[in-house]
Length: 121
Image (cartoon, rainbow, N blue to C red; front, side, top):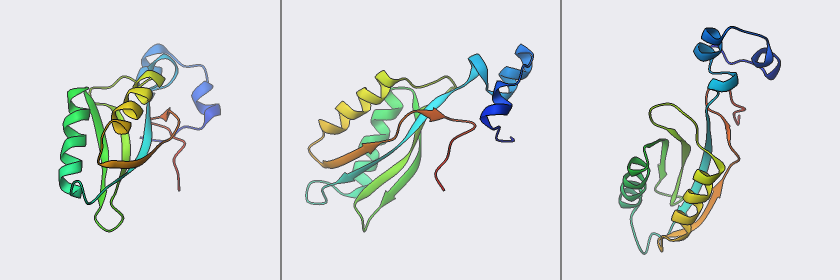
């Protein structure tokens, strides 16, 4: 799928085409995140399993992984079956991560367009 610029997304289109291109009322949002784990409390694989259990219970999808050397997990979070995440979902993730004793720090990026970015280089 071609990534559209902001100007291209604003171009007048039929409802069918807006849906196909995921623009306008069909735009979907997600966000990037990174969190650091305490290796004294849990291993990277166990932390990733706990994280995946949590996001799957919410109906979300996570693309990313972990670094054994940096004790860090990073990736992108979005809805599993289409749709959009909200600021409320971001807050929920923040509270969940803050409530885990094995998470030593976390950073969540602002919501951005799942299909068209902006993406970090």
